[in-house]
Amino acid sequence: MKQEFEEEETYSKNLSNEILNMIENAKNKNEKLLHLSYKKIKELPTEIGNLVNLEILNISDNQLQRLPSSFGNLGNLKELYINNNQLQKLPKKFWNLINLKEVYISNNQLEKLSKKIGNLSNLQILNISYNKLQKLPKELENLTELQILNIGKNQLQKLSSSFGNLVKLQKLNISYNNLQKLPNSFGKLINLQELYISNNQLQQLLNNFGNLTKLQKLYINYNQLQRLPKLFGNLSNLKELYINNNQLQRLPSSFGNLGNLEMLNISYNKLQKLPKKFWNLVNLKEIYINNNQLEKLSKKIGNLTKLQELGISNNKLQKLPKELENLTELQRLNISNNNLQKLPKKFWNLLNLKEVYINNNQLQKLSKKIENLVNLQELNISNNQLQRLPNSFGNLTNLQRLDISNNKLQKLPTEFGNLTNLQKLNISNNNLQKLPKKFWNLINLKEVDISNNQLQEVPKEINQLVNLKSLDISNNKNIKGTVQLSNSNLEELYIENTNIDELIVPSANKLRYINIEDTPLKSLPQSICNKIQKFPNDIIIDHSYGNDDKMFEKLCTQ
Image 1 (cartoon, one colour):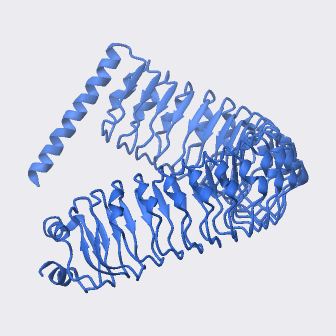
Image 2: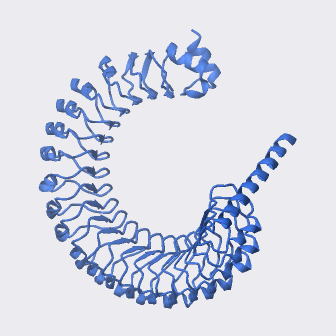
Image 3: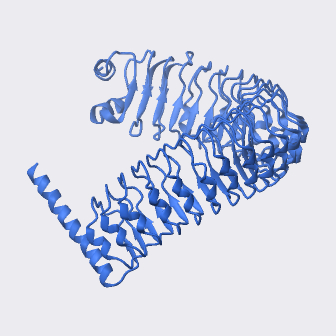
């Protein structure tokens, strides 16, 4: 203990000498820039105040709990970086640094700011995010040159009535606070281009919010907004809008005036319909309307020909308009968790689709024209009522991830074996009794889940899947006897609730998990027993033998 203390004391002395030398050198050379970040500094020497010509100082990522009073002597300082320290307050003379233009004090423990912050009238950028501020001094309004202000991740409950005097603000982040409303003066911030106000408790926006006509990015998600102001459509320069996770029941008719919108997220609200002019937003590239209460989509969705991503999952849609075919640029579509019984005939003309999620609907069949979607890389059609797949399904040769679980499939088409780029496959919870011979051509498979079917056997051809990392054949009670797995890359194996009584695994080097619950296994493969003995922390075995010692005694000491 004494030796550790002495070593720490020696290190601190050496560090102090190093910092003093750096400060002395900077003074002698009349340096204007000094970097002292990542030095594990706990306390700055008072000599820092001798660097009266310093213009840029970086003391971020240290362990500073306070700054010396001499810090106020750095009268020529223009940029200051003290992020990621442990400062609880700033010295009184700090506010004498009237030439400061940029200050970064994020990730500290500041609980309040002095009224004298108003002295820093030349300040253009201020970042005091990730602190413990509960309020801001009224004198902040004196920082009339401020262009970028980040006060996110604090504990602010309100903004001062004069906050709107910061008329030169272009970028403002007040996310992750406890704001319930914005001051009336907020509408004076007419130069704002980016506003981040998410994760607060806002219930409404004032009508003058529509004055912020230069806004290009607005993040107001995760609040409690029940409506948007009528003049919201005046924000015609908006390109990105996130108003998801609120309580909106409708959108104002002026919403259709946001003609420059390219990205819109209005998911997780209570919208039952969209205004007619909504479909005038022809520059949209991404729309997310997931988790609302929409019962239908307008035919005018076909106007949105630039759309690349569309999310309308978890609504109440019973059908899709045929005009969806006009969205020829669409690459990602999520229509899961609706009440769809079929898809429009020309749906299959959306040739640029790469990801499609139609899971949790009521589809009974797929058109043979699915073969047109040759660019498809991921398809989820799980939890429907499909009884078969068309033979043309095998043309989807670019598929990498496929989930067709929880359907009523009794067999897979022979052509399924053409999907040679598949890496992840889930066909669990169907009525499959066997797999087509060509199935074992899918040598790029890494994860396979065939659980909860009626498979009769695991053929030896499974060992052709040399890249397999995870295999689940659990709950196939008709599988019995011996199963041999020589897949050397196997990491996870699930055989619970089968009638396998002998398992042959020549190599268990990479195996880290196996579930053998409710099986009649008489013994474990020697490779697994060896691993348990040599590297017990590298493998987990779920079993039905009480504790691991009993399991080992029963299955490894035969």
